[in-house]
Amino acid sequence: MTQRIRIAHDGPVATVTLDRPDKLNALDLAMIEALAEASAALTTEREIRAVVLTGAGTSFSAGLDTAAMPEIARFAQATGLSARTHGGANLFQAAAMGWAELPQPVIAAVAGHAFGGGFQVMLGADIRIAGPDARFSIMESRWGLVPDMGGMVLMPRLARADVIRRLTYTGEVFGAEAALGWGFVTEIAEDPLARAQALAVEIAGRSPDAVRAAKRLIRETATMSAAETLAAESAAQAALLGRPNQIEAVMAGLEKRAPRFSD
Image (cartoon, rainbow, N blue to C red; front, side, top):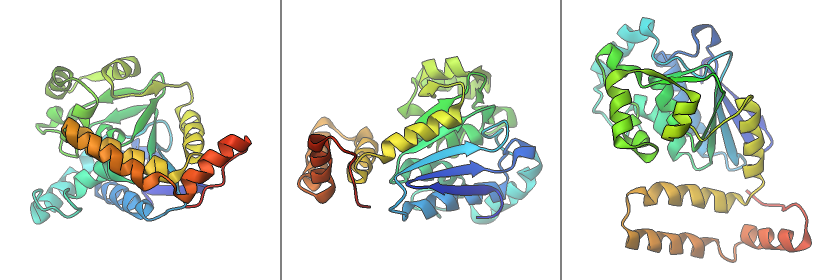
């Protein structure tokens, strides 16, 4: 995993921390690789029911490390950005898309900066909780680039096209209230990490079968027709009905006790 990422397990919740605080968790090649590896590793951990994604120190991620640009450029030229090395994605896209495709819900706790690639990594989370002083930017235009870490998949799921255009063309910095109004942020909290961890614990207390099915259903139906969506709903529900965790959810509710789900 390298020293760029820390993963801490607390029961059914895993906290993934970008751990380069002296550089505001800026993305170099090692950090990008570690992000892709972390989401891939958590995919197979059935006992983990929710994930918190955060940054060490004062920032989530200040985006691409400018000092690492030559190394990243050499890597991109050697491998080719068009090479699909991680399913339908390349390495850089997997650093963000891996969280969107993770079976477990992911909650991003965002303080300080979420710029450029860091902004796109944040968008891979299901839920994004920002501190009141957090700052955001789709910064790639400042470097003569376009968002290419899954942003063109993730942004349209959250914000209007005209907002995406304005922010992508200008590279402007905007605050937490604007991010909330535009849909990039789910909520604002004085302590985003504490709020994210509390929400992760709450989610982890639900049936893991139902939560995973809900995440998959929400993701897959985003581009489906109404008829396809209705069929997908029915298929997902049929797969849950009568299974041990679904029965346990009902029994725990009737008996007014905490459920005991199996992974």
